[in-house]
Image 1 (cartoon, one colour):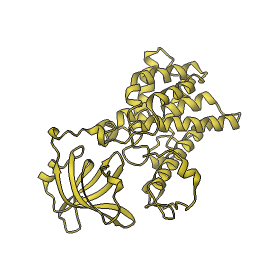
Image 2 (image 1 turned 60 degrees about the vertical axis):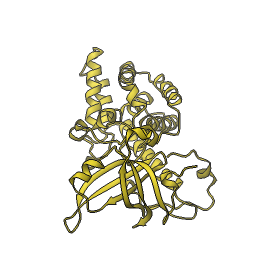
Image 3 (image 1 turned 45 degrees about the horizontal axis):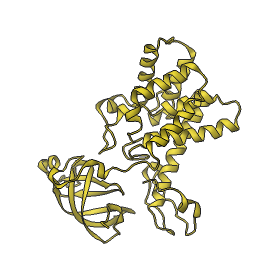
Image 4 (image 1 turned 60 degrees about the horizontal axis):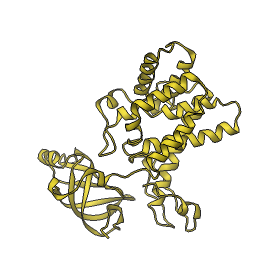
Length: 325
């Protein structure tokens, strides 16, 4: 069986076909050019620097290019990296395609769609339910195919839907426990909160930010989609129902410094922000632990302020859990 990228251990040399997930031309301290690269296949991704690069190298080894990578896996400052010996662009005649290098969510799309539709059916407010159904129909193909992020969490095909469904399950538990929670508003907020990423991101292969993603961002993009849907559906654009739904998506990052244009001012909005943050953290930590040997610490996680997490020598729950990536 051929080894995949993450099957190699530190010190092992590799000659493997991978996808360049990201490539950026940068200057080092001596002002020499190099390419900061992220290589990946369906097992995961690892960073590597291509030294003494030039503009032609940047054009040749650009994001989204399939290459043959010859190098050695090493560790640098607690993180795995590839010491690159050589790179060669793999041509289309060699039989490789982008789908071979894309990780997918650990749950089939048809099952996620069925589960999510069950939550939609529980939204009792007509305005919220109709808008949710309208936007799921409009963007459903992308919604169930796209990742939830470029790199930090749920950065896999179907990751957006998987993240959304996981949040809905958390929301159900909170609504079951706290009778004062407006279940319909919380469910609608969970489903729509990140749907703007179908416009913010380019898709599951070599994911990048679109121009509107960089200039506007998914919080404002989904607010715009809600208003367009309400207009198409002839809803009152000044109704409180619409204002509450818009507030849910516009405040879900929780803090101004996290890119949120508004702070949560509804109980359900506060819960949405915390559920979103919780699910992202659980996913990121779990994924790191699943790639860390028992009895060792994970590499520092940027999404968790550089913290490292310990993989216990005996942890049956973690070992039994489905592999995320």
